[in-house]
Image (cartoon, rainbow, N blue to C red; front, side):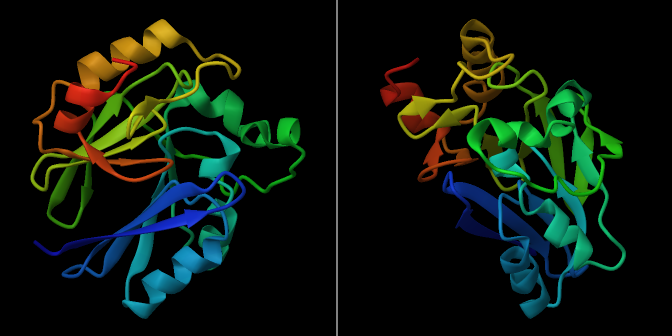
Amino acid sequence: MALEILSFTLGPAFTNAYLAGDSDSKTAIAIDPAWDGHIILNAATERGWRVANIWLTHAHFDHLGGAAAVADGSNPPPPVALHPDDYWLWRVQGGAPLWGYQIDPGPEPTIDLKHGMAMHLGETQFEVRHAPGHTPGHVMFYAASIGVLFCGDVIFKGSIGRTDLPRGDHATLIRSIREQVLTLPDDTRLLNGHGPETTVGQERESNPFL
């Protein structure tokens, strides 16, 4: 498999950002470029990858604070993908001012993510899974061929996403987890937005919130 996944823990909320690169096509996707976009960009440059797209699981500021730097340092600037139900959040800097930050949210999203949509990086296909609850437009990216789910802030090792922020909803989040996460094979890796990675099976057995 030509796909390589790099992870970075960046920014004030210690957010996990990911860079998925395809060694055959030399293209890469920045998933939730949380902060310090130059770090992500440098990692791509070192490997000879061109960042072709920025995919956002949702529009909270700690998941897109590095998007502007990634875009500014790329030629051409990569288009940004986001679910339309989170555009309202993107337009208010992902809520950054509520936490005392001012950020540049980067290029305006031009790829409208929808549930069931197929996205590609080289020969690897990703399925977009809409999983609202943490935010209305939260999505996950599932690559069945490699058993990986980029799940953002839907579910964590032993925990779940917050639902006390604007337009969050606990019951909706639990339903999203049951329908969009726990229906996947137990050995599926969960690459989440905060903390260590885990698996579907591990969370099914031991997550106290489920």
